[in-house]
Amino acid sequence: MKSVKSLNKVLGMIMVCALATVSQAALVGGQNWADSVVSYTSAIQSYGGTLMTPATEFWPLGSSDADQTGNMHAWDFVGGDLDYVAGWRGGNVDQELVVGFNEPLQDIAGDDLVIRMYCGSKASATVYVSETNNNDWVQVGTIIGQSMQVPGKPGFLYDAAFDFDGLTSSDVSYVKVHRETTGSGTGMFFDSFASVPEPMTMILLGLGGICLRKKK
Image 1 (cartoon, rainbow, N blue to C red):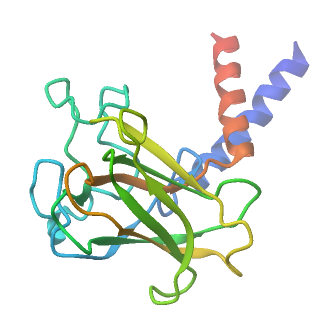
Image 2 (cartoon, one colour):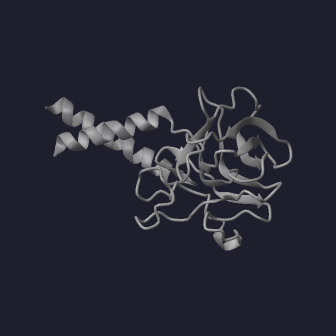
Image 3 (cartoon, rainbow, N blue to C red):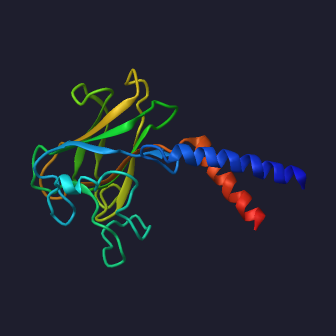
């Protein structure tokens, strides 16, 4: 019994420290979320067609918040989903969006960046990262839609993951998505940009939940 109490106490202290760290910058739930919109082209807009302005640059920042119903179908507005996304529609050419991280993204084992977004069935975009400025870009991958699949299924969000895998020499402070196709079915809308959850943080959060259930 004492050992269980001691374990709970230790875990509690660890959780307090973890949560204290999480409260800094844009670290939430073990993930580092984009803090700022650095630049964007003229036709960047919400799904409903409202152009993004300095007052609405929060749309693709912070934690994922478009899917309030939790079913990864972003446009269930009657059910409570929010139109907090930023991207482009089919007819807008040469569009791109650049976001910044106050706490740079690290090149860890496995995937390093995850973008939650909607991708049209004929859409295509290139994803770039930059270490210390938004000029020297390195391509880390592409996002390509497919008919009636995710990404590409109408209205459904998708988590696109990218591995820096030695492509960068230091931590990443900027992420850019650049449009490659135009026309019907090539729209893209971005809900959030973040690091992949750290395994140890997720383990600690899981253990904390188990301990709380046992305590009840």
